[in-house]
Each structure stands twice: as C-alpha cells, then as structure tokens.
Length: 251
Image 1 (spheres, rainbow, N blue to C red):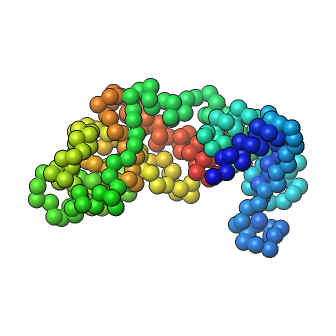
Image 2 (image 1 turned 30 degrees about the vertical axis):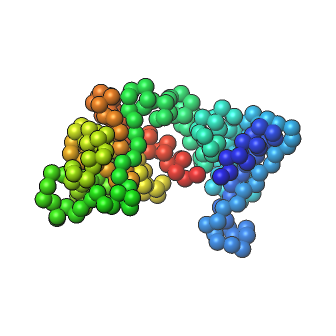
Image 3 (image 1 turned 135 degrees about the vertical axis):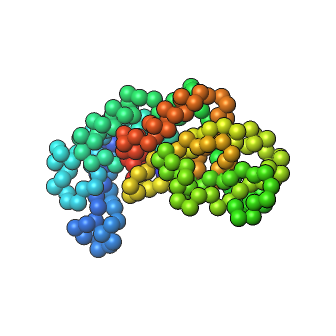
C-alpha cells in the first residue's frame, strides 16, 4: 500500500536520509519493540542515493560508519522490486553482500521463465474442500495432498505426512492438475518467517501428489528439464538464498 508514496519520494524529492530506530531505550513511552523512523527529503528530486541506517537504538549512531550505509537508486530498484522496499540491512558488510546478490545475478522471476519453470498454486483447502477426503477414508484411485508442513529441505516425507487425498474422480474437470501430477515436481513451502531456523524450504517431490495453497509448486513440469528443477531446488535451499530472502521477509 505504500509503494506509491515511496515512488513519489524517489522521483519527486531528493531523499537525504532514512534512519529506522528501535525503541529499546524507551525514547518514546510506547512498546520497546515499536519502530520509528527519521526521514529527511528535499525538493526537487529525483533521489540518486540516500543515507540509510536500520535497527538503530540511539541518535549518535547516525554518524557511526559501521552502522550507516548509502543506498543508490539502482540498488533500491533492484533489491526492492516492484514495491521499492528498502532492505533493512545492518552494516556496510551486509550492503556489499546484498549488492553482489541483487545487482550481479538474475532474480528468481527472471531466471525461471528462461528455463521453462512455472511456479504457482493448486488446491485451496477451503474452496476445494469438496474434492478432498481424509487419508484414512481411501477406497478409490487418488492423489495424495501435500501441504507446506509436509515438506522440508530436500525431504517430502516430513512430519506426520499427508492428511488428505484427492480422488481422481473429483478432478475430472482439472486435466492440467492430473497431467502435472505425473511428474517429479519442485515444491516450496509458502509460509515461513525470518525468525525460523530456515526461511527458504524446497523439495523435489515424487509423482502422485497435488499441493495445497500453503505450497508453491511447478505447474508445467513437462516444459523444463529435471536438471534445471534440481538446480533450483539446491539454490533455494542454500544459505545464500536463505539470507537474501530473510532481508526481504524482515521488511
């Protein structure tokens, strides 16, 4: 919702600084976990670079070279994506790593189409409830339903396993689902937080499964090579990708 405001600041003003403070020292008599920001902008624009600092807890830190960074416009647009979010990095060392990741390499959105990889959603447990049955009620030909919590990094047999199945008769109107379920597919857990042990979780799953809305899954596995999907699984589960994703999940 704030994308338009950020774009207007960047295009119509010259942003001087953006300093984000945590209230751990009780500068304001509010929750110590509450954040507040000091933003200075001058007209006319546009902004070419801006001094930034995040997770500050005292005013003197705005002159600390170990805490303050300079984001240029190209970095903001590349790392912030469509919404122009400012990554909340903590030091110039973090900035150097982020510049390498976001400026020198293709984004996931750019990388996947070139290799025929299409990621999306399948069943919604609420809207498609009429298609599903509990696993204990299996009597006919079916596909098992993966949820986000049933996969872990490289592992599709996580936790207690699938709770639901989908009879083939219930998806006669979904030929694309039936076709995709015949292939090995890359699946990503959709719900994860920057405070979890790992934020990016992907597995290469065996045929015979459909996926709930809590996972993002390949929609047309027949259009790509297994090698590309396996490579992407390894990239997503890497520490580098996980670190990059955490910077966005923390925004």
